[in-house]
Length: 115
Image (tube, rainbow, N blue to C red):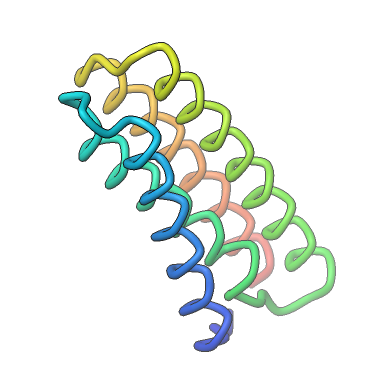
């Protein structure tokens, strides 16, 4: 597994801007900071997997990136739904936490299978 520093930094910056977008769209609400931090963190983790990390082996690299992109879309939809419907803190943390843990388990399996 090899990390590309420049693309990882760009992924974090894109995620920070997306998090700020969720903050700005929900400003004045009591949950806007939670939504901004949660979405920025989830986007950063998945975008770094999509853009900033390269796995040895062609099939492992493609699988790693596809799974990262799928979970990026899942997090985007989840955060959009919570942003428009309104966030209850416990369900937001539980749902995004479960998605993040499933993402980590799948990515771990992909990395282990390429070794």
